[in-house]
Length: 475
Ligand code: 6PG
Image (cartoon, rainbow, N blue to C red; front, top):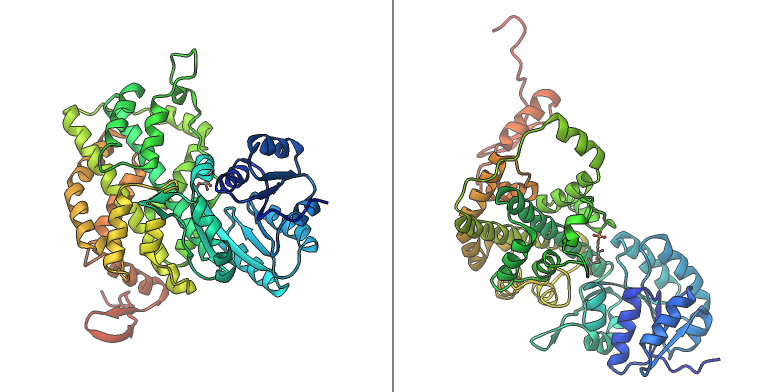
C-alpha cells in the first residue's frame, strides 16, 4: 500500500487532468492521478519524471495515497460519467473528504450532486476551469463555487497554479451552490459569441475584400497589437499562418466548414431564455454552428439560389478600419450580454456574484481573456452594482466610437449577400436596447385582439381588454 503522502488526487488523466496535476507538482504539491487507461497513467508518470507525482490504475490505491481530508478532483466528460465516478468513489472515501468537479457540468446537475454529497457528509464544489490544454499546464482561470470552507482549504493550491495578471491569481470564490459552473457556462457562451464574430470577420474579408489567408494572418497580427488584443484573436492569427510541414497550403483551407459543440453555448442560451435575458449574439452563434452542419442542404440551396456574392466596391484600407471597429463594437456587446445574464442570474439564483472579481479573473488564463476585460473590470470596480455594462460611461464612449464602423460593415455585407448573422443581431440588439420606445405596444394589442390577453396603458394603472372587431352590423 502506498503511504498517504499526496495532497491532491485527480480522476481522469486526459490532457486537462494531467496538465493540472503537473502544474500543481511544479509548484511543489505532491499529486496523485487515476485513470482507467494504463497508457494515460504511464504518459502522466513519464511527463512527471522528477516531480512529486504518482499515477494509478486502481482507484482505491489512489484514494489511499492521499493525505486526509482527501481532496479529489474529477475531470471527466459532463453528464453520466461524473455520476458514475461519484458512485465508484464514495465507498472509498470518508465523510469530510472533498470532491471537486472540475469539468463543464451543467449547473443544475451540480445543484443535485451538491445536495446529495452534502447529505452523505462529503464536501463538494463545482469549479469551472478555463484555458484549455496550455492553460491547465501553465495557468488556467478557475471559477469555484459551492462549499466555501472546502475551497478555502485548497485555496493555496489553486492560487499557486492559476494564471497571474499583475501578480494576482485568476481564481476567486464565485458564490454558493452551482455558481462556479454557472459562471463557467456563461464564459463559454461568450466564447461562442466571440468565435462566431471572428468567423464572420473572416467571411467578410475573404468574400467581400478577397483577402487571402496570408493577408488575414498579417491583419490579425496587427489587430492583436491593438485594442482588439485577445487570446482568440491571437489563436486566429496563428491559424491563418499555419501550413503543415512540407505543404504550401494553409491547413485552414482544407478544414470542413461544419462546427461541432459540446453544449455549453446552447445551455447558456437555454438558461438565458428561461431567465428572460436577451443574449442574441450568443443565440446566433449557437444557431450558426447548427446551420454549419447542414452541409448537404446548404450545397443544394446554393444551386437553387445561385446569387453571386458581390465583391465589395470599397477602399480596402478604409474598409479594414471599419471592420476593426465593427469587431470591437460587437466584442463589447457580447461581453455586455454575457454579464447581463450573470447580473440577472445572480438575483434569480441568489449567487451574489461579484462582477468586478469575475472580470478580474477572466483577464488571464481563460479562453475569453482580452485587453477589453480591463475596461469591464474598471467599470464594475467603479460601480459594483452597475445594472448593465452599456450604462458605464467609459464603455459607452467605446461603443459610440465604433458604432459607425459597425453600421457600415453590416449594411455593406447585407447588400452584397455576405452572411453576418451575429454582427447583424448584435447591432440590432444595440439599436433596440437604446430605444426608449419599442414597437412592443403593437404586440400587446395583437395579443389582446386574438387572445384577450389584456394590455396596460401609458399613464393609467390597471390592465385593459378591448373588443377590437367592429360590432356585427356596424362598419
Ligand atoms: C475553456 C473552453 C473549454 C472547451 C469548450 C469547447 O474554457 O477552456 O471553453 O471548456 O474548449 O468546452 O466547447 P465546444 O466543444 O462546445 O466548442
